Amino acid sequence: MRKIFLFMDTIFNKVDAKGRVSLPADYRAIAKELSTEIVCYRSLSAPCIEGCLEDSLDKLATEIENATDFFSETQDNLTNLIFGDAKRFAFDSTGRIMLTEKLLKHAQITDTAVFVGKGRKFQIWNPQNWEKEEARIRAEVMKNRPTLKAPKEQE
Amino acid sequence: MRKIFLFMDTIFNKVDAKGRVSLPADYRAIAKELSTEIVCYRSLSAPCIEGCLEDSLDKLATEIENATDFFSETQDNLTNLIFGDAKRFAFDSTGRIMLTEKLLKHAQITDTAVFVGKGRKFQIWNPQNWEKEEARIRAEVMKNRPTLKAPKEQE
DNA sequence: TGGTATAACATGGTATTTTATGGGATTCAA
DNA sequence: TTGAATCCCATAAAATACCATGTTATACCA
Image (cartoon, rainbow over all chains, first blue to last red; front, side, top):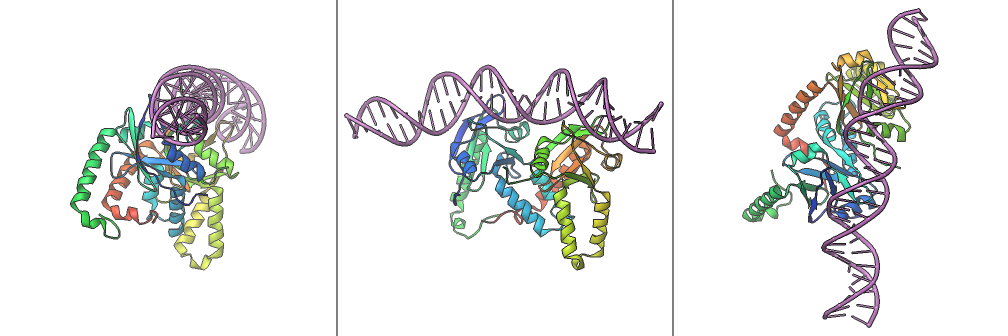
């Protein structure tokens, strides 16, 4: 069992008429080695698809279970939003997954998808949107350089 | 053999004149692999049907056994309601279950049922009600963004 | 180091299977 | 024996697995 796994790099892959995309080989290797599966959902904060390992969501489910009792309403909203939107994506023998209409639409993806590593997660963008987003992030980071050093981040 | 079991995604299925609905294939797979059964009951907090694995209710029963003194009277009452209301729903060879009049009425479901994953549980909604509910939740979550981070994993 | 053989990958196309769903037959109970 | 529940069959559509090919990256050898 692998100790370290990180989604990295930025990869451009074609999306065909059926919505099929090759999951980057590195990403596949991670899911395979951890014998878990990829889960995708609409990002809550950006026009992109977000992906992670099913393990991560399972952990979240367990935390919710333990933190609240069976009937609790406090986390109820969240679980609806997160799990209601998430979906497992198993890849076939050639390494492709089939993204749903809902996800593609949210990310405005038509024929090309950009996979952007984010460590424990990754995102899938429309190329133009990603270009803009990357520029925006870069500018932002350059502006507030010092805050990069601060222990934990923003918002 | 799969190691993670989560009810996810949002699926729209038809309810025919006899009250039959296809249980989403993913949900069926979970019940099958765990050789347990699906249990449904009227949600206590919303006009929808709630479902889970019989295992989950068993766990709940055990918890109550072990910690009865900690349970408030109201929660105790809730368990009465749940167990009194819950019913097992076995699916036939084509993967359908037959919801009862009581459940359908509570959720105002007539010809279409929306299955919404919640991790260890799931809900079944009337399409219009779910649409409204989802919008409500989304607005709420966006407002209190910070609470989103709390339950999420920490690296 | 340069060049070639080999393997891995992305991707288009096609075949096969699964799934949802309608309809009818059969069984069971009141 | 009538209504309801269960089972079985049929079908269309969608999801999935499989095969083939060109391209790129990697390994290997002179």
